[in-house]
Image: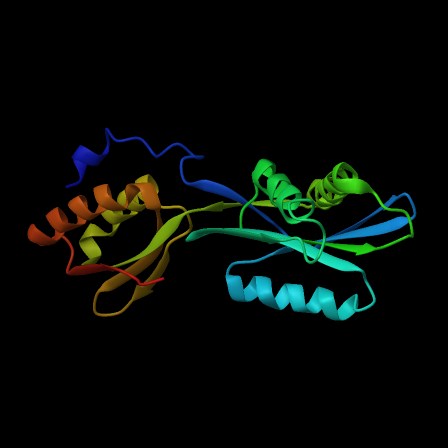
Length: 217
């Protein structure tokens, strides 16, 4: 029934892939008696970033500065703050390290306890960049796949064909339900959504599936 799919190859494994930090990380750096503490955490939204920032600020109330930056992928959003340090000496270096890391959906807060020796503009840029770099270097990474969730209702005699379709476009193990008819849900690679939509419309027009839909995020 779906013989025309046999010639299609699965999408390249990295086409829809991205990397996120797996868990929070803390790293310390001492520069001319100043203590810098880098805090890294996964963040899916600006609300997550604000919550993380407030937690770090609460834990380090006596710190001289809590400078920060975050980078989110959906939608793509980035922001940074010098938190009272000279303009461009803290937030931007932290954000630059994040962008160069290949990670998305994360925030880094660099806490500074002033040690009595001024570092100058160049020294601050290097110290904040190094602090962020240490946190990023210690972070474990987890691979994610951009996808949309699909639900299909189908007769039992076309299950084999739908399994083949999901092998081509899917990213996970499908979840099946069985009753008067079969129902399956699965994650479909984002880059394959348009092509899968064409195939699904064809299958429904031919009566090979009862219905299908993309679930809202």
